[in-house]
Image (cartoon, rainbow, N blue to C red; front, side, top):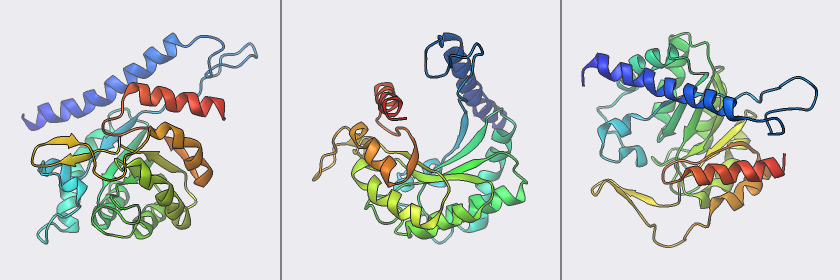
Length: 248
């Protein structure tokens, strides 16, 4: 694709999400959780986040799940790679920017510096991934990574995504030590991505239960925003919404 075609698709992705939000609003009925009994209609704000994935995803070799970019990839390399996409998404109509599946401390630093350098005036969240429940996938400390997000004034939430559900509780507790900002959690299904086969495979060892049953435990640990990442489905999101509506 040409640069113009790619940038058009970035903008279109946000437009589709905004259109889905309008459809949701149109279908909402009095008595749903977006309305109140006062004579006036009150909408719970539905925000659209534009996704910025990691440099590793662009490499298409699974390195977003290892964070190993090699010595040739510097802070400036990452800033130059992400800068134009960020500029396009800032003008897309999104309410916030979601920096997702961040696999190492270096990329978190690159994002934080870009937010400062570009004079970003819309909020962002930083979401990391882990394969051991202690560090991010590169082996960098989750405490150090969360501290980078905490120190960036444009970042309004910090969290974990595309990580097996069994690791989430401990990671939430660790992140809470580094920041008082809201914690966002959206795990994957617990499966493992095979970069050679380019497909998800069942993990050996511990098998994750349906993680919707963990939501209240994660909320008690300090998380406040919930969703699902790879291999989760609309039914997963529906079930999360049901749990949260029963325990507001």
